[in-house]
Image (cartoon, rainbow, N blue to C red; front, side, top):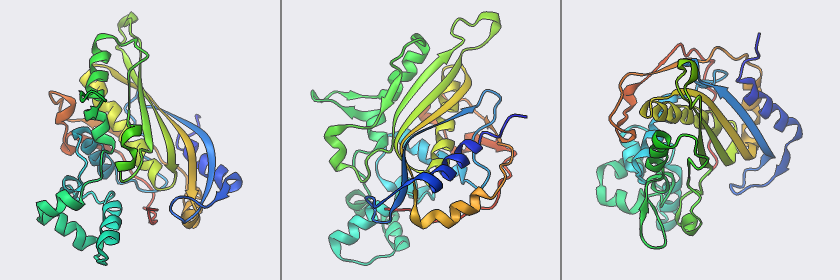
Length: 306
């Protein structure tokens, strides 16, 4: 019997617990860090890698991906969907600038209720979605990288240039957080469709920095959702999601939680169904996603490092 694919993730965390380089990081919390990792997940049978050794709130992950696809960079629309994962950065900026020790809930309510306040304090700068959908070059031309990839998938599926990325050097200083999942590259197999096989779409993601315990389960889930959406839009079956990490790390304040997770046995991955085929990549809603058979172990709480 094949080993459960989630062990790729668990083995990586166990390796860092044993061999990670202990260092002080940008957040001041400290990490156990290593360079270079890869995981591969086969989505061809409809299963989706939502990790099971702790509950992953997959709807929040997919909502964040849908937000990236809009090109929006303000947390207001995320908060309308009850997604609070980006609040820490503008909240910290507001507290530092004003000296007001406002709590997170009060800050989020002001963002939701006061559009002018949201425009001033809720924007994250030119983060992921802006770069994916509205990259502005030196001549002022705007490039929709994702739309270009989808066009190439339809017209030139053997291309080795079906890439979008967010590492815009000239705009890094204006971002609340530098891009972590940086480069997305698509690959099509069965292009000739011999034997009646449909073309199969795979996606490889390079992530330069990865909080394995908190961030990676979220990232893997939402990247699989992106692959499902793009495959549907270009009339292809899903193939592999290949994730590669640069600086992969465990935060020192997560170690007890990680040991708890490592003590658990993975359960079967769930399956994903898209209930509707929207007209374009821009039109998906969270209601379009149905995850079946997800029965994970209990959630494990931990604080995000800002």
